[in-house]
Length: 117
Image (cartoon, rainbow, N blue to C red; front, side):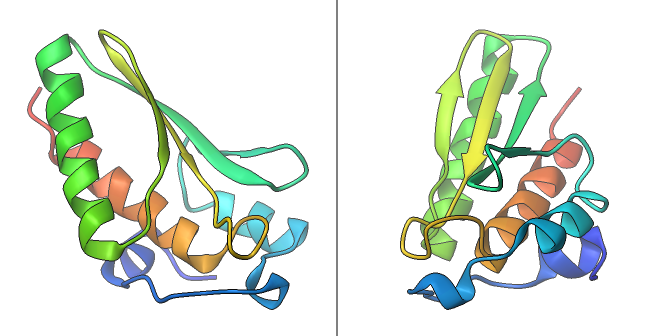
């Protein structure tokens, strides 16, 4: 299994069909390198709550995440509050979690690590 740095350096590719869906064991192994992420349902999606000190930092993260999603053409579902952002990744075209979700989760980790304190 690739580490966080390796996953974060990859780019998404268009995926269609259940053959690209990761099974439960693959998702569980991947979660070991994605701190704080969890599987939703059996393995329908990946989810993490990012916490920030204030609204400005939360929205700065959301904007950076939106730009990355645009560049990768892989978009998360977001829930945004004053000091938190809940990020959910799944690949609808494969019916669950794909490698693209792991890549974007790793990239989200890098964005959060680079966020101002």
